[in-house]
Image (tube, rainbow, N blue to C red; front, side):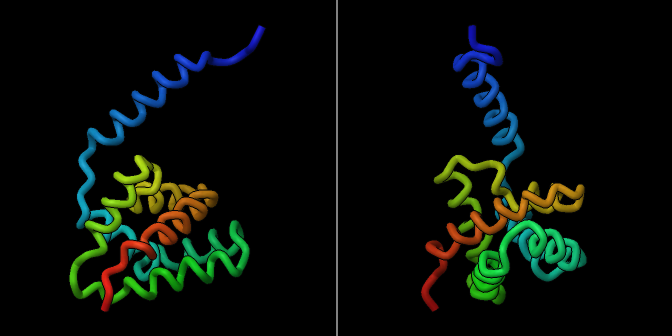
Length: 128
């Protein structure tokens, strides 16, 4: 006999998580601000330390490079791009505000989500 939740129970839990996550509406401005905080704000050193420890140097370098391309964001397209990635992938765990919160709580593996998000954002960048 198999232990643990059935597939139906897992699907129900997933549906509940998705519903709760999408209930807190995704605000592109808040998410863009959180991403800027991660790479440039007061949390920068904390994030840098966690991600250098968790990821290999090449992956963290690519992640920072992706941010470099968004840094100026004159067209204010970062927030909408983040929202599009999260909605396209149905990936609530990639919200920058949530990633920032997890990193501040010492959950270093959130760096993987941060770099996954940045990789997806590369394809959404407006042409200069």
